Length: 247
Image 1 (cartoon, helix red, strand yellow):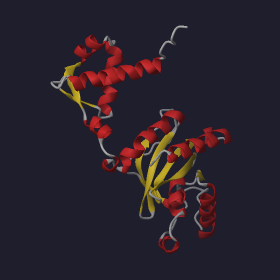
Image 2 (cartoon, one colour):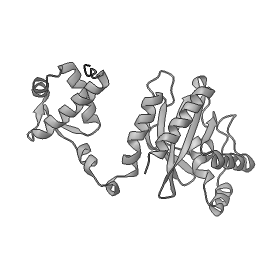
Image 3 (cartoon, one colour):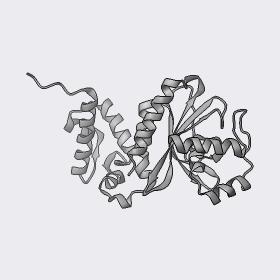
Image 4 (spheres, helix red, strand yellow):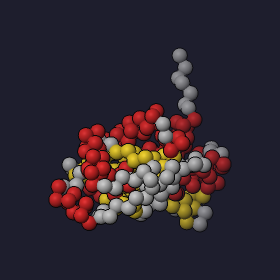
């Protein structure tokens, strides 16, 4: 029986590794035409690979020459040298790739939640958020994750110190409503906010625990017109999967 032919994704992965290994082996750097000739890769395909590897930091470009980039050092770094952003960024990209919906990792900053890493959907109708964007805890699915596990004394301060603006007609703002939401989040392990921060956008989030501490939350934002029960369950399962992959 003949061995199965490598699929296109496998061929692409092999080419990517070939390019990295070739550049690493040529310390003076290599130009695109040289790499294409040596590895028998069409120039059109190579241009895409080189651009992607450079964008991700695995290669750097000096003039026409490509050299090893700092991303290769991260692959060898001990776990203790990796930042939280380093650890979650590949998982955010995986979420976005699986769903083609805007995916983020959020962290708490006081009484707000901040997008630490985000990857936008490429669909025409999408919700986009820039890294560093902050929104109030009470309105976002990820924000409610952060608030749900506040220690009791800090929870009391939260309700005493925040005004909790009604950002949309669906925003839940009262202490009673939010405490009910927090209790449900702690019982189910995920958060759902439907058009509470932005009209027409639904969000889901799950907590990420590192060394028994709440480090942040993975979240996915979906336009309401696409958000049905089937997609909601798929998003929930993928969120739980990636959260479990953070060690």
